[in-house]
Structures are given as C-alpha cells and as structure tokens.
Image (cartoon, rainbow, N blue to C red; front, side, top):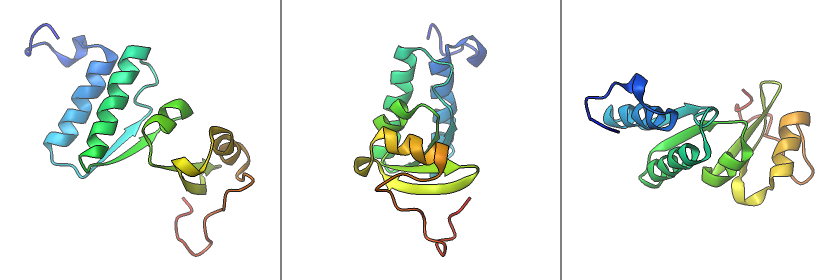
Length: 125
C-alpha cells in the first residue's frame, strides 16, 4: 500500500479481501462469512488471506469459509460442512476425513466411513 489514503478500488485482490475482513472485525462481528475469498487471487495473495482467516479463528472469531477450493478449506478449517444438492451431506472434523471423502460428499451426498447428519438434527440446509 503506497498510502493510507489510497482508494480500496486501487488495491490488489488480496488487499481488498483484507479490508473487507478488517471492516467486519472493526464492527465487532462475532462471525465472519467469506464466500470464495480466494477465487480470483494469486498464490501470494491467497496465502495472505488464508493466514488472516486462521488468525481470526485463533482469536476466537467464528469464520464461515465457503469455497470450492479444498486445498484452502483443509488449510484453515476446523470443521467442514459438505453440501449436496443444497442439503447438508455431512459435517465433519477436518482431521477425520481426507479430501477424496469430501469430494464424494459434495458430488454424491455420501462417502464410505462418513456418517450422514441425523434426521432429527435440524441441520439439513
């Protein structure tokens, strides 16, 4: 950043994401929802955004990361909710699954060794 007076529109994609996240933090948000925050970013910018996401979570903020990039998800997530046709296929601890299982959940709604959500859980969508 050349100047603190620089407009957001002149910032890089990673810098814009950082500004958006900082706004949420300044508003004392308890939850930050990020929809595909790294989709249009380069490698270095993606790393910056993911480091920021992890720091926010480490500081007690709830972060909901919506992403098709499973590398990003596995890098920063604690838990993964996989949707299939708009319904919750499963919610799992990242350390208890491998990417292939998450791909199966997203594409078929099931995966060997992964339990489907309870019909009584209320968490179907």
